[in-house]
Image (cartoon, rainbow, N blue to C red):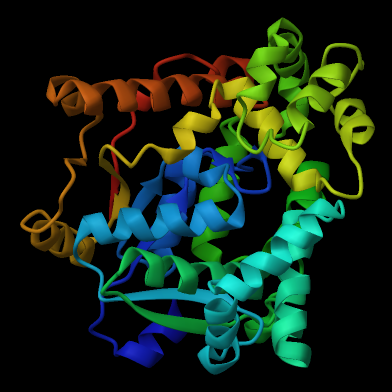
Length: 375
């Protein structure tokens, strides 16, 4: 966020589109979404809006498309800023243009027929057409950055791309740990809080003291397995990314294996990544189907804001093409499609809070009781 302001000027407002209670790696967010949004505003953001859960639990391509679609609908954003290991649009743009070509599509189809994963097929297409320049796709943030560029182009978005170099958190004394490593250390109680900005550390410690974090899917192990065992084979076939026989394969092991880890391990093959399988299991738990992935967002949900964020919100309300929800109860008096979508997200929150460490914090209906943090 600091580097974005360095590039665009101190007067620019920063809007974050943030995953809610479930994240793209296919797991429970380690802290509840309002707490994370409040930490983001304390650390430099002005306004945080929520990505729909179906977007958050999508492949990199759908994730990028969903984020661009949401921010375009919001109507207040001039730039889309994202991290990348390359930190250079000139290295990323040719890859995005290449992968959008007919030649790349031909190579991708050929590789898929050979049994390659979709990500590996795209990598092969880029290597075939661009040679060594395709090596930038070897790192995850570059890969997602290319998807953002592709999504901006395909959507005809007016937002200008801006990429910030990812350095692994090495600057300012923060340890260069991956998100997975940070999550693991938090869950084992071994994380060094001096690696977190002070304001964020305070908020996360408050959540832990209240028994609302760190959140681990292991607490909901039996609840997830109960859903998996109740589902029919057809239900599995209708899950997102269940093509190529993966739905049937997941079904075979989901109804017999004793743990979700065993389900994933047995289902895993060279072609299917753990992230894809974790997302499928989480979608099964939440009742998200393949058809839900193509449904456009029904509203903009605000999670946190400061004074400048309120100004952005007032300006956006004149151009936004979707209803903006700041008070959760207001969703119940909106058009039926909005109410239905909000109620469905509320039910997903009810399933998320079951993973809070303190059972007394797991009450249902929390989506309707938590308003945006106004700082």
